[in-house]
Image (cartoon, rainbow, N blue to C red; front, side, top):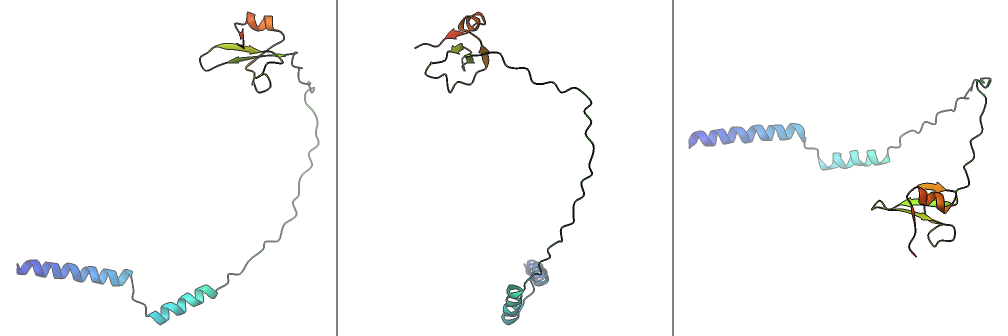
Length: 122
């Protein structure tokens, strides 16, 4: 039992020494003085002076002929595929035509039906 108390005393003394090393005791007055100095400290602000940017001018010489984009054919019928995989087409004037995002476009209802789409159910 005596050896246990000696061991416990040694462990506690090592722990207390480590605590004093990592957490030094500072008197309250010194702590408040440090806190006041840190609160009043104003860090100097350094505003960098802008440097003028020099952009080199590179002459533009086109290497290829500019081709205008090809016009989209007249697509008034909007084809849509729902979550079940059903292919449906919408005609202008249908209630959901304006908010339908077309996954396929067709010039008329006949070409939409030929592609496997069906009209909406009213």
